[in-house]
Length: 245
Image (cartoon, rainbow, N blue to C red; front, side):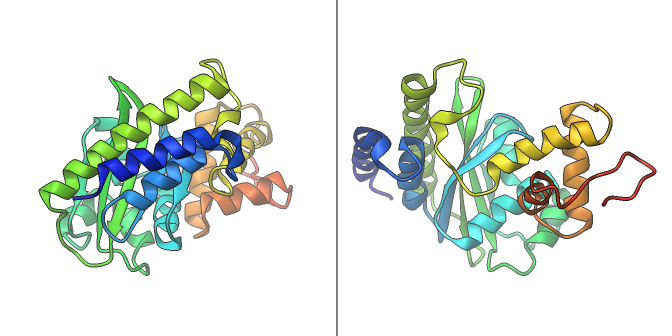
């Protein structure tokens, strides 16, 4: 089982460091949590809904790509864990059941060295805060001690991140300044969604986000990549019936 005492010490150090860490205290706390997760790599993502998520820390390029894929296709264990409030333990992605449940995600991950995914919800009561995700390169279950440690890690991170929000952002912080920079591209998605709302003639945010995601999936690009192009005005999504520029 992981060292919970060491994790708490690392999180406490991150909280004490405050703004001294690159990306801010939220990123520092999430980095400690991501590194502590079992398996071959971990990521910590704040998520209140499918459209509102920000990955604060990821240990390697593989899990960064996994989170990006989930965000692009709008399905996967991270989202399911947030919605249900329960861990989602996938010991073998090649299982036909998972291929039916998450066809888009399984297709996106086909070329990555990932065979198992484990998502642990971060919640305060019934309120979703985010998810702690880890992966394995080879199929296989986490043992009960690893699952227990991952759940406790999610709890430690939830309390620490909410403390940072209270101290640095407050309950009315809509800009997310307390989060630091997070992973590159996350803020661009929110900015691009607002721009697409205008490009499509004043549609709602959910409609704009769905169109943004559909374009990314259809063109085999990440949501972050398409969003960056829109923010840079290299790409314009036309209303239905028009061709994207």
